[in-house]
Each structure stands twice: as structure tokens, then as C-alpha cells.
Image 1 (cartoon, helix red, strand yellow):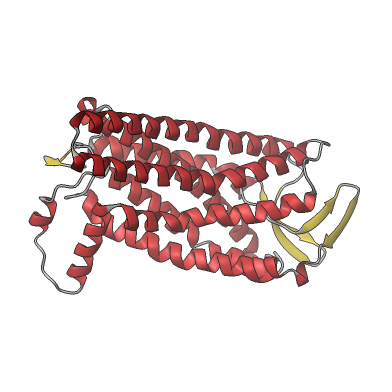
Image 2 (spheres, helix red, strand yellow):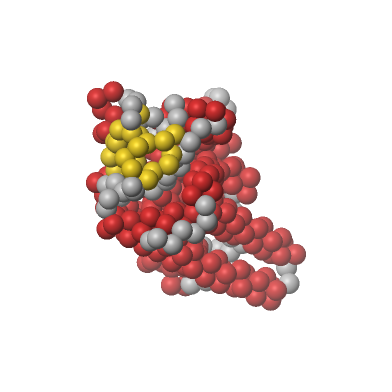
Length: 354
């Protein structure tokens, strides 16, 4: 598991385990479990609705980018299913007491969180590249944005994420500190600490550079295109598109930047004798930033609903179907909607896709 938020004091010169007033800490015992349950319920229903609303549309009448969105929602949905375990553990002072299968649950839940982290980064990066190809390289996007290419990309993302999560599965263990079992990383593995530091930096900085470049180029392209057209309607679409791009970038960076900073500082402290910041401050910072990163898994459906007209239309269509109200799918699919203020085409069973 890539997220650590323990309120315990470890000493290299002593095997004694000291609890740092955790029993009287309202943040660790009350607020953190409540946040986890809130993220669990909102993330579960939110991402499940995304899968239901857009899942059927990936095969007919949907946009090619919806395939990435559905896979991202599926990854978040699987992740939030592990949060009740961590909520229970946090409410018990981080004690991991789940019977004989506790060690397996410790490893698997940490593995799921790690896989979710990598798959989120990969799918967001793929979405930014897909937007770049669709908007900027419109004439060259026919083959790159085919259904087969999109599905193959998703498969590669899942396989890569599953593979990169293996170290978390191997270097996670259930350790007894006194009477309390705690799910932690192996502190005696310098290789895992170095690997964690490298992946923390590489898996954030590099994807952010790609995302910023892709969306920055899109913004410049749309600005030039709409300015040349001098069309008020195109200008309105441009403003909406830029707002969507800004929200995606800001939410991604705000969700992950604090965690990556505190994770890097914590790992540096573990590897060297140079301590950056107080140990207690880093623990609290890592706790808060981890919760913020977790929130990213439930905020995406809100972004889609608030800013994506296509998603809202499909949600209304699904709701009317469930309530027995008839609506012609043909008339729905004939409605022209461009998410980023530009026409995009892809081939999927002969249908034009956005």
C-alpha cells in the first residue's frame, strides 16, 4: 500500500512500541473513519452510476473517450470497496484485527490501493493524450482513436498497473507491536524504500507534464480556432472547454501533489539521517494528504455530471428508461454534442463518435 498514516513512534534503538496518544486523538479515531465511509458511499454510488450510464454507450451511441472514463470509474469503484477495512482499522487506533485472514486482507487491500493509484494516473494521462489527438491532430486521429486501439490501450494500462502493484503486495505485512497488529510496509527493505521514492516522483511528475502539455496545446488550438471563426457560439463552447480542462488539471494536481510531497519527505527520512520536518508533522501531513488523494476517487463523477452535457443526457436517458418513460435512442444519438468545442471522429461499427 502506498498510503501510510500511522500515529506511532518507531525507534531504531528500541523495539518498544509507543502509541502517541492515539486513544484520545479525535482525528484518528473519529474524523478519519467518517471520511473513509463518506468516500466509500459517495465513491461507490457515484462510480457505479458512471459505469451504468456510460458503459452501454461505449458500444453504441457513445464517445470513444467514454471507454477511458468507464475504466477509470471501475478502478475507483474497486478501490472504494477496500475503504471500510481501513475505516474500521482507523477507528481501532490503526489496529488491523480481522482474524486469521488479516495478513491476506492487509496485503490485498494495499495492493488494490496501489493498483488504483497507477491506473488512475495512466487513464487520466491516456484521456489527455486522446483529447490532444482528437482536437489538435484531428486529421490523423482516425486510426489512433479506433475502438480497437482504445480497448488495447485500456488492457495495457490494467496489466501495467497490476504489475507495478506487485511490490506493494510483497513488501506489505502485518506486524505485531505489543498487543496490536498493524498493517505496515517493511521498514528493513531499503530496496522497497528506494523503489517507492522513484515511483512516487516518476508516476506523478511525468504524467503531469504530459497532461499539462496536452491540455495546454488544446487550449492554444481552441483559442486560435475560435478566434479565427469569430463565432459567438464557438466562443461559448471554447469557454466551456477551457473550464473543463482547467477543472480536470486542478483537481488532479490538488488531489495528488500534497500526498506526493509528504510521501517523498517521509521516504527520504527513512533512507537518510537528514530529517526534513518533524516526524509528527509528516505523519499528520501524510494522513491528511492521503484522505485528499482518496477523495479524488469520488469527485470525478461529480465533475462529469456538472460539466459534461453528454453524461447528463445519458443519465437522463437511463433514468427515463428505468422509470418506464420511452425515449428514442435514435433521436438521442442524432443530437450533436462536442465535449471540447471541436468535432471528433472515430470509427466504431460505422458510427461517428465523439
